[in-house]
Amino acid sequence: MDSDSSRHYIGETTELRRRFQHYRKPGPSQATNIRINTLLKAHLESGGSGEVDIIVDDITLTINCETVDADLSDKATRRLLENVALVAEDSTDIDKLNH
Image (cartoon, rainbow, N blue to C red; front, side):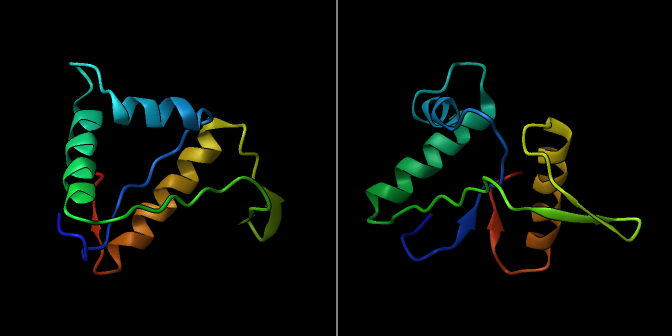
């Protein structure tokens, strides 16, 4: 991955520190973390930089014409938002790292 490319990985977690620790030092059976670790190292070594976007609150959803606050402590809600972001990425020219 060169330093000018725009690539995204979209994921969800309640323990961001643990998630990044897994990217930094993936276990031998953590295929996704090993792949992300390799890509991040190559990107940073080529002079690239990284950004992290974090959703922590103030998310509302409209379901059956009713607006509800998204409960980010609920894994199903976080997975829903993760998948919405993945679908939105499919409509752009950005290379997703989720595959």
